[in-house]
Length: 457
Image (tube, rainbow, N blue to C red; front, top):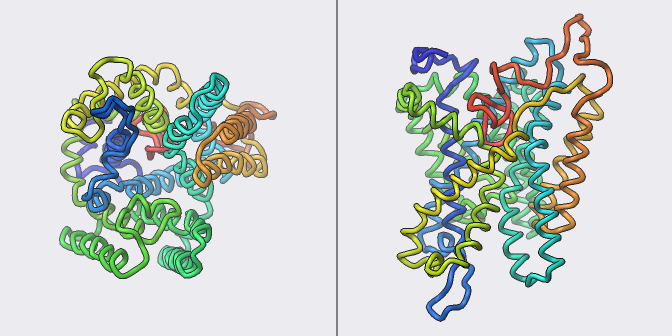
């Protein structure tokens, strides 16, 4: 793609908007920074081991989450990506099963080795008698990002359905999802039963994904700059009554699981800001240095997202063995040392990507399985992540994840029937590699990808 195609005037939102690539990279790196500042492991002045959450213990933390909670933006970008990829699939004669198979497989592949790793590590730690309380603390923290797999996988599996609804009634679809989100929150807070809020895994995240559909259709592009500023201002201003008068926490991380209405306000505001920044981001993406950086990081996004917490925890544990390498958490030295630790974490993840990054890459697979098999695989990838989100990671759920994700990969891999099935029109269905990019359009293994975690096509 030539440099001219990176300018604001020439970006075709119906095909690719490279500013979204840098947005994805920013989102994932910010998640790494936040988690790095949330893991405090070191020795106190009395020489005792301290394990804390330095960032979360700051009095200003809740206010910062209004800016730092960027997962809604990621789902907006994912909505843009998935609608673009779905339309590309349809143009090539593909079916909903083809699309969902590709998306689920690209989520399941990189997650499988992570769950196998957890089975080995947690099982081994229990066998050698590591303190159960300490082990539980570490494991629960390490598994916290896995909620994303349940929410994003659900959204991806429903893209064909939601895209159809968007085509027929875009405003009506948004309205129904918004009403559903409000009703789910009302029932949750009035009954005091948090589990009721799990319905918003469906309503809130699909609503945010639909905003990405609108972004892909150019709705935000057609707004004047002052309109975008006004919409963003109203969206953020709505958080004050929602958290001050309403039942919602002013900590946007608390509002993440189960997801709540404030995340929708954040998503709308962040989408407007992204569009306002698009000229600057396009100019930035027009430089070779930025494109190289985005490619290097973007081609490893799933590895970075899935493995950054285990790496942070392992490096923190190793630092305990080095005199002076584990300053008191939340102390001045600890804060200043985070820059060095961030570099070490990214270097470790870069090295790890050569081992596990192969699971991000598209595989040569055969014909698409029947729709019921694709649906079963989608359910298999949802269940372990949902269980971890609800009950936290432990050995049984690690085993469940390894078995279910492994089964999903096998079900969606080579399927009897040849390299490609013929469609009713006589054309082969699209192969597992994503058609929206020449190399690897749908997964985080390419900066142009769009189908899995921290990426979009």
